[in-house]
Image 1 (cartoon, chains in turn green, blue, orange, yellow):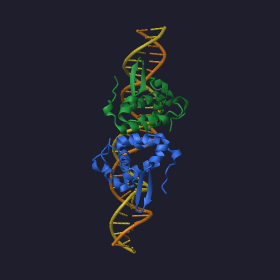
Image 2 (cartoon, helix red, strand yellow):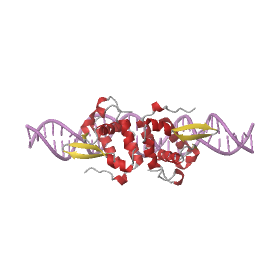
Image 3 (cartoon, chains in turn brown, purple, yellow, red):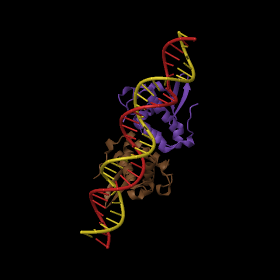
Image 4 (spheres, chains in turn orange, green, purple, yellow):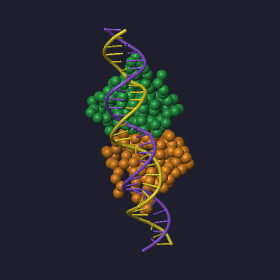
Length: 113
Length: 113
DNA sequence: GCCTTTGTTCAAAATTCATTGAACTATTGA
DNA sequence: TCAATAGTTCAATGAATTTTGAACAAAGGC
């Protein structure tokens, strides 16, 4: 449905710059915290307005970090962990082990720094 | 001399956004390729104008990715590998193993993507 | 069919970033 | 001292990013 890059299309600099943002890091951290679970966009409503969130989610989808699939009126978001691991071994693990230790998005006033 | 953040001051999002740029990724890749060696800024002159390079080097220094020390009229640049490893274990290794396999900066027409 | 929920899209504004060239500083070497 | 070398700083410009709110679309429940 929504366009997702293939594994071969993943680019290191695109992935890193997508992750180099506090809001998006917080989203990844929360996804990692519940590995395997699909979360709807509304789960992250503490991180900004609806349209802004939509923007950040789209950016991560285009970078190949998450997969987004429609499910009713919602969009289920999952981490593309296996894909990222195969293209950039160890990258996500190292990022997640730091990002996971940060407070979850819904408990924060401002995005993680 | 020049201000460098301490290990405790390193922030994941700052490091990632500093690395999320093709020019800076190329610099890190080149530094990693000659691990331990200190390179002067002029080594990277294929990547842009003097002032632009100065900007990118400063950005990485402020993010804590490199250390820059004056040596005569030159500035010697080194990767802060141990510091990054201790704060974000595995991060640099995974990035470098991808970045190192890219062509070195001086052999390219445009920055790495 | 209508209303609600969930997101997207769009245009506009605000911000930040990257790039350039000129002027400048500091160090070295002749 | 003079000139060359190596970088920095500054202001300006253009590009890209982030953010907002309003309008829109699609699915599900009543």
